Length: 447
Image (tube, rainbow, N blue to C red; front, top):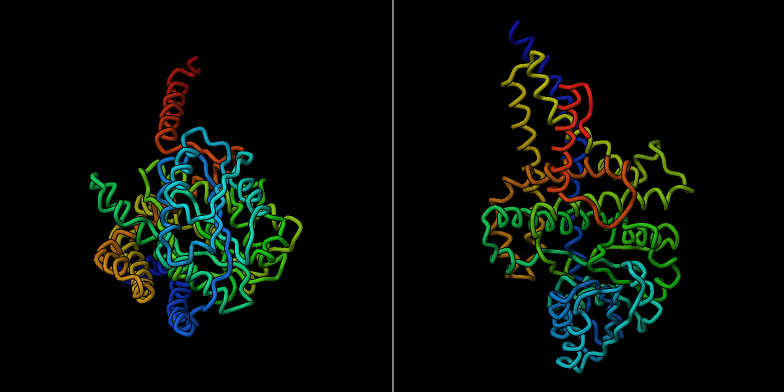
């Protein structure tokens, strides 16, 4: 009887385990072999003998603390300065960003730089700059990061080797030197998880998506375009905070072009400041995705019947349906124990699930360290953080939980760039609990 009951309970939990096996483990194994093929592409690239003129756009909003370093990384890049035009697109900054720009212009006279005052909003700043761009390629980078020395050269080389590529996004990693300087042990641990997450996201996830022209979004922090192709789009959508996703869809669906990842073009951004930043950042990304999908596909056919041949539908299922199931399933185990399920069986299923995700991360880890061979310092740091793989599944779950809250907030609050951070949400939660307790105890609300 005990064995029969154990088999029934295991059968129930194994059924739940089929979800990550089908939707995550199998794609990860396929992706691992796909990445081995992808790496061969970079061995065949021919070095360029002539350097096309490029325009670099830096949208700025209160960026006095980071703008100089960003411009300096352009100055120090291996791409010839005389072949670069830099447009600083300021969208109503209220700090000393302009003074920083003037300092950089004085210190780097060989760079052709121009300051543009634009309407508020990143999309508007980018659009205004595109009309002022010149050259064969338009590249935009965020003001709060720095380019790896060969990033511009690598991304242009990728373009020049394949005329069918219309847009490229670079690899985004967090700045190692800032992680190392972190004084708080907890924050440093979170930042180390974030670093490996970015590696997994770009050098595994997006690298696989690129193989079939299925890139879901080019990074808003570092992306590049053939200028003539960019001018055929509707430019950046000012109605959504997911303007980078919208642009990716325009390139692929509207212009029937190709938008891919250039793994060897690295842009380093600042790591998370705190948990509040993680909380608001992930919700903003989720809201941008939902807004863009709604705006872009409201007049286009997209339904669950196209699951197997439409990667956008699969992405929706993964980012929303499976995401909700994952979070609900994780908390449901407490109720199941109360209902009589074996605590040992429940915990065993969690152990199995944990190691399943750990195996997926390990596959990606092996592929990523190979991509980083051309960047010895990054590779050395990456390999030294192998132990972070063991905490990464938990970090991913926390991010998933934040995204579920983001889905709820996206349905109940108006769209805007700034959202309530974790501290503010917890204060509101306490107020609701206190109010409901008052109602339950006294039968009326306190004014």
